Amino acid sequence: MITENIGEIVISPRVLEVITGIAATKVDGVHSLHNKKAADTLSKASLGRGVYLKNDESGDVVADIYVYLQYGVNVPAVSIAVQKAVKTAVYDMAEVTVAQVNVHVVGIVPEKTPKPDLNSLFSEDFLNEQN
Image (cartoon, rainbow, N blue to C red):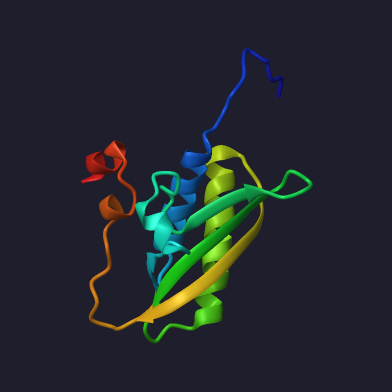
């Protein structure tokens, strides 16, 4: 296949955060995401709601995801499923390879607690169009 270079493509880190967050919350057993610090809840700089992306020394993307899991799930199995889902989703949608997906299980949520919906997770206008 011949690829013609007709310009530059720049993907905002915010886009990668949204892809990461949605992929993580769609994994069975994940209840919700959680900011790692209380100050992040109030900060506009931390719009990722529990998703933190950075580049390591070699330039690779590293994701830290803070999650609440549903009661009764196998914590290691759900965590591995989150890692795989995030790596796959980010690569499939943005062709960005995530070198590490670090899953931080913050807590377990009781069975009858309703799961928050995606509109409350990310306040993006395009999410309103999905329903």
